[in-house]
Image 1 (tube, rainbow, N blue to C red):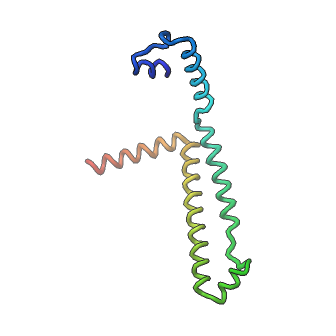
Image 2: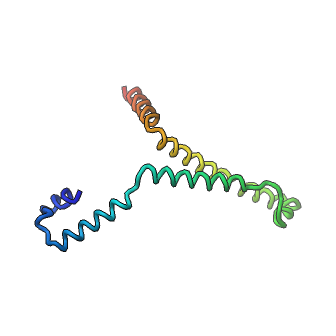
Image 3: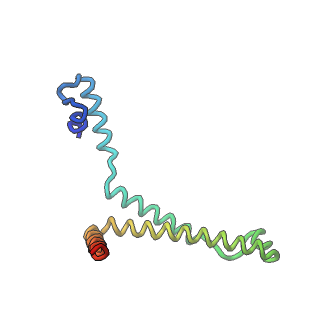
Length: 128
């Protein structure tokens, strides 16, 4: 990778000073340590899926505070509270669905490949 980058600038690794070579080596080691892998993405999606599922399970429809009790007497306030709760639930459900799909995509590359092939076949039918 270093050679490719240097070649774009018309340089070669052996033409660099020892200090520049060492700097490039340190940079490459740093990049290699921080590379994103399928496993790290899989772990991240699992953590996010669990946290969203937890948040969804904590949504409570029963009146539990003074604002909820007040909304029983002021219907407009109750409608706003219900709308807010529905929006929050809908957003969390959509995020959860996205993470589940991403997790399925990462865990089964063969199924993903088949799905992509079906999609490409569908494109061919549309253009044909």
